[in-house]
Amino acid sequence: MQHQRILVLDFGGQYNQLIARRVRDLNVYCDLKPYDMSVEAIKEYAPIGIIFTGGPNSVYDENSPRVSPEIFKLGIPVLGICYGAQLIAHTLGGKVVRAKQSEYGKREFSLTKSSPLLADIPQKSICWMSHTDLISELPAGFDVLAVTESCPVTVFGNGEKGVFGVQFHPEVVHTQYGNKLLENFLYRICGANGDWTMSGFVSEQVEKLKAKLGGKKVLCALSGGVDSAVAATLVHRAVGKDLICVFVDHGLHRKNEPEEVVSVFRDRLGMNLIKADAADLFLERLKGVTDPERKRKIIGEEFIRVFEREAKKIGAVDFLVQGTIYPDVIESGKGKSAVIKSHHNVGGLPSVIDFKEIVEPLRDLFKDEVRKVGTELGLEDGIVWRQPCPGPALAIRIMGEVTAEKLGTLRDADAIFREEIARAGLEREIWQYFAVITDSKTVGVQGDFRTYENVIALRAVTSVDAMTADWARIPYDVLERVSNRITNEVKHANRVVFDITSKPPATIEWE
Ligand code: XMP
Image 1 (tube, rainbow, N blue to C red):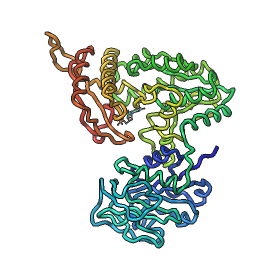
Image 2: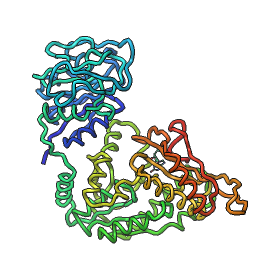
Image 3: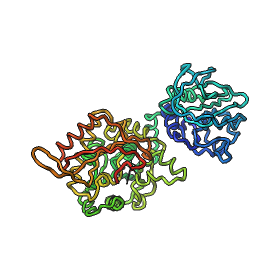
Image 4: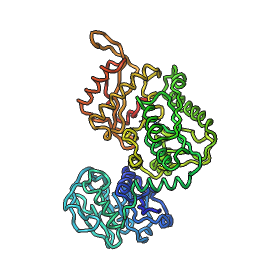
């Protein structure tokens, strides 16, 4: 079934993926594509509406990204946001100028004319602005629909043509009725029918996967992370025992993780799961290694070797499942080197396995959609809401040499931190939170004894994409409980510190 779809043309703004996620959240499928998509390609794509995103440029600069005026002759509704709005005005004969003062942050805007785009939005409400240029003259046939004190054209449109522009960002949560505005555009202007739902996705995908993979052998590397877990569960629904999952236990996982993988996927879901026990092997290979990049390299290579050994036992397979998701696809589509993601995926897996084709059942989904699919498939919250964990796992959270003793200390400290964050109900607000075992020892007194033990650092950050991050403002009483519990319950730890550095200049991980 072909879903109705919205085309989001990307002009390089920081909130662009967020716009696409909001549209999907309103049950309309959409794709984020480069702004220079040809009019022919747009026609072929056949969207029910087009959204121009924001972007860092000024429309009057010579080399700024533009669109062909032909787009407006297709009879497809268009919504321009920020730069996108200015581009509509500029392209159709209006005027955009540099404002006397840039406008950032929350502003009150008032409606000046009624329009289906602004239906059910109060006369005055708050929007989120971030612009230096403004529209000073509208093209013929367009009306001002809303203003702020300093922005004379905050919302404008031509109802007949279905072309609208908004200077603010409806996609960010600070715009009180931003979601309503997007919903109005989709449902009142583009005629959306809301046919994009995750339960629909699951049943369609299962049918598709059955048709494609039925009766064939399928292999999947389960890492314990959300994406591979959901991908495997979806494929398992379609092909059952023909799916073989391999989980490499490298002994560097967080507390109870390997046990959880086995209990969920093998015991509860009945999957064909092979657990390769390689903890001793990895520890042996990491002996004496202190350089972070060498640790990564050794773990990556050893992982492939273990996986290859297991795959050889299985023999040739027809398909290899990968948990690629939509942001990976967008990033590689832009021709940018996907710096962050390249080390997320288990490098080099496909080249060592004998298979015919890769299946990527989640390649159209954003992370929040992957989570919804996971829930739809009956996976527990502990798996669906798991925070991202780096491939080398605890090895890069142990400063210096990785030893069994340090692993034990870190695992216990990290588990306490996670438990307390969960107990405080902060799990979903914090992007990543974990403990690090530093390579410093300090003096302490525990009971009547002088101790000389490890310093544990707590790291917790908020972020949207891991490219930048801020340290999470965890309440003091939560930190206090974590610190008390770690120094009381964990062997070889007598001091706890909290990392208050953003990224940049630091990174999220310590190594
Ligand atoms: P940094 O530390 O670079 O981390 O700010 C950004 C994000 O990437 C994760 N990360 C890794 N993921 N293999 C991975 O699969 C790695 O070697 C690795 N190093 C960092 C990190 O957890 C954060 O989400």
